[in-house]
Length: 405
Image 1 (cartoon, helix red, strand yellow):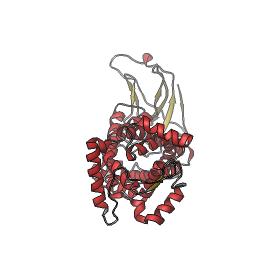
Image 2 (cartoon, helix red, strand yellow):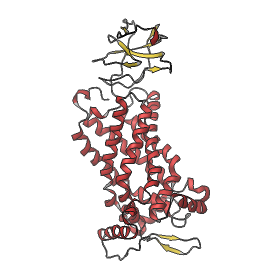
Image 3 (cartoon, rainbow, N blue to C red):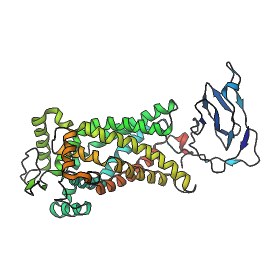
Image 4 (tube, rainbow, N blue to C red):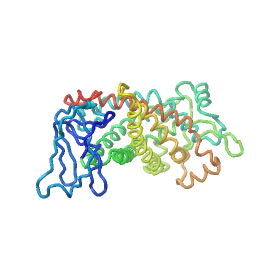
């Protein structure tokens, strides 16, 4: 056995927690164990746990001891590390604030307020992205900047916020989304599941719950976004988008138009109409969410290893969220276009929608509306993580506050 210091050792520290940095082979050979000074290491039935009260030093132990060579029966092998001449100071902070560390009475109201604020600032990007996705070729808008200019000049600032108040109901689904994500992650943590696998599974489950709640509001808000927009058919004939046949009298208020949209959806399609594109939404957002959280933690680990220790951990988290948004957008863009077309143009199936898109766009299906979606995703990811992680810090219980950086 050799005992060595690790000058650049960084790990997630939980003041009452488990050691996620401990690694084992499939046969149970402990190849790299992290130990705290004056705290013993315990192995029982192949499970390694540490519960230090207030660690001050970190050491690394490299050993080839196999559990089969340890004392059998009900006894446990306990090894106390000797003092080192060159101790290494522990980072002594929590990198991931877990669900059980927070005061929920603070977290939920602040989380919903943050979500509403972000939506207020970035909603125009959602409108632009949707209009770029549902148009044929580039007949109306040539790109994100062109769409922004034409919408603002033709409809004013109100045009950039079409369907906003309907979409604000999505903050309710956001609360369920976060609760599901943190709850599933907490359950998986208790069962010692790998950190990145936790993010993948929890992100997917959270999206499935969130989409079940949000799709009806998404359908209505998208109809409001594109209602009255001029498009051009295959033979360049002028078409005014109005799939539901809504009266577009300029004297009608937004509330009356919204209620009319709800009524027409129900008359034409029943309750099923409010969940048009639900499967497409799941196929788009479940993998998107699962991958986003996985990439978020992956990029966070990589950036944390690259940046010097004085760099703000919140800044690293925001950068990781932005990079995660870029990556998932590139991978899921075609699915999002299919979802938008299916919900707005009232097509029958994902297969038919994809066929129509492929006929119209060919390989451009991979880049259609991509610039707007990339900007939207990057801005949303940065803003959401900035608000989310800040609120977690504000909501953390007092006993953990000294360990937060």
